[in-house]
Length: 281
Image (cartoon, rainbow, N blue to C red; front, side):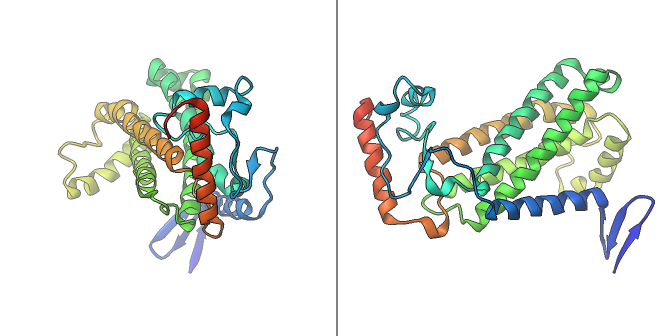
C-alpha cells in the first residue's frame, strides 16, 4: 500500500521510501526515453543510407575542420571515423542523442568543478557567484546521470555489445559506476549537515564490506581529494577510451538495421578514403 507523508512529500511502499522529487525525475526520464523512441529526428542532409558507401574525404577537404583533424587521428581510429561529418541513416533518432548529452554534461561538471576547486569551500558557501557555480555543478551532475541512465537503457535494449563492441560496453559500464563513486564523494564534501548525515549513514555499510580501512567516509579531506583528483581522473580516462572504442567500431546499429551489405559498404568506403589521404586502413 502506498502512503504519502504530506509534510515531507515522501512515498512509502513496503521498505521503499522515495521522495516526490525523485519520483518526478524518474517519471520524466521514462517519458523522455519513450519520446526519443517515437519522435522523428530532424536531419540536415548529413545522414546516409546504411548500405550506401560514404564518399571520400577529399570532397570536403578545405571546407570541413572535422576532415582536417580526423586525418591526424587516422592512426588511432579508422579513417573517416574520428570526427565523421556524415552518419548512417539510423543515427537520425533521438535515442542516439543521450550519449552526446552525457559527454556534454560531463564537460560542464568538470568545468564547474574546476572553478569550485580553485576558489574553495568557503567561497561557494558565502558568495552569490559561488552559489551559482555550485548550483550549476549540481544540476549538471543531475543532467549527466539522467541522460547517462537513458543512454544505458537504450544501449542495453539495442544489445550494443554486438559486432565486437564488448570492450565498448565494458568501458561504458566502468564509467557509469565510477561516476557513481565520484558523485558519492561529492556529497561527502559539501561541508554541511547533508554531508555529515550521508557519511555517518554510509560508514557502517562500508566498514562491513571491508573497505573502510582505506576509504574513510568520515575523513572529509580524504573524500575531497578522491572527489577532485583521483576519481575524476579515472572516469575521464575511461570516458576517452569509451569514445575511442566507439569511433573504432562505429555507432552500433539497431538490431533490425544490421546487414552484411552495410558492413561491406562501410569497409569499402574506409579503404577508398585511406587511399585518398595516403594512410593504410
